[in-house]
Image (cartoon, rainbow, N blue to C red):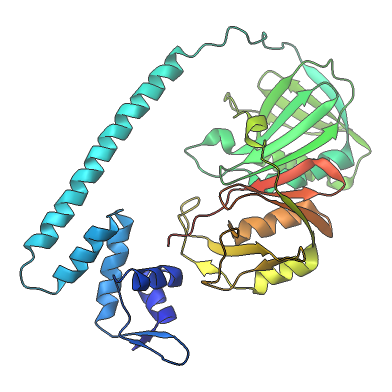
Length: 362
């Protein structure tokens, strides 16, 4: 006999998924302990669980999954083959429809014009930035830069300069970090440049000696950061960065102050849901489910105990956001379970990160 945890490990189904399929009557445990309610599965159920894991990865409807499992042990495999063929046809129709929609979207992109936009700024822009502020901005956002080679525009840090302000921004689709700092010497026109991650790292290393001020130069697709007679410079990709300002307009949520050391310990030692969520960046992340108690304390839910207002997040991403916050106290802003979680500094509204919530499979 296998415990529910052992079956989850051996089959690739999460514990919450197994509980869901039990209540749905799809994969019912061979025995349930009458005193503890703990589920136990027979040896033959491992093959069924592995089959179920494959079927759910195809997106097969639950009603068809139930029929496939019911017919699997019989000698007549005709029904199983018909159900598999029907699901394949559904997927092919869906793919055909998706291709048609993507073609229409690409046509819109080809025709897209923006005659109201201002002409691009020309000439080099040189501005002075306090070195400590520049270092803090890079530290606050670098963790969120993307690594997907298919999306090179996200593989760096955006420098958005306008008026006397520089915004540093990074995102990999699943999280975004923004930092704001003041600059001097700029004429006020807006300049945007995406600094590739290796160059951003070289800039941060240049600031390790803690100079008082540095000069940032943006000249076309070339950007340079100079500290005295040393500089980090390079060319930047010719890509338009997404309008991050639209992405950070979040509905107002519950704001909760957390003591970062204690909260970090709770995350690192608390329960996680391994492999129970959709992949992020090609991996199945460890998930922490956060809840806000009546007294305003943020806790980490035990497995299977989540409530309707709890928020599931990638634990590693949240730990990185807490570290980038660089404060012993931070503000977590919770919206609905489908709304991004914001991690804010109580003393700096312009520096924050947001994490997309994770939908548990079950």
